Image (cartoon, rainbow, N blue to C red):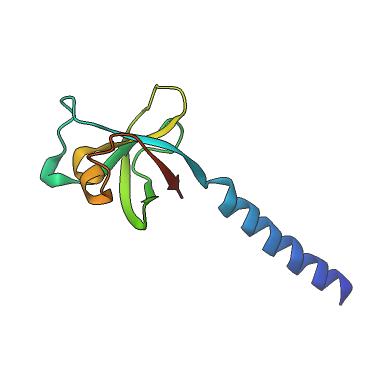
Length: 103
């Protein structure tokens, strides 16, 4: 019984640690420099996440899901660059650079 309980806690802790390992918070900006997206897709650039993966980006009570299709940002302190449609959906167009949470 004790071994089963220990195994259960190890699995629960392992899953929790895995899900928290991908959560980030930091600065986000948006790009509109010739990176046209088709059909207004919500896309983003991230340094390490695999291409095609979907990130949930949250700011000011809003949350969007965007697909990684580029590498970046290459400015210190920023964790994600959003396409113009994604930035518009998140409500950050007037601010330009905002603090977000990325899951």
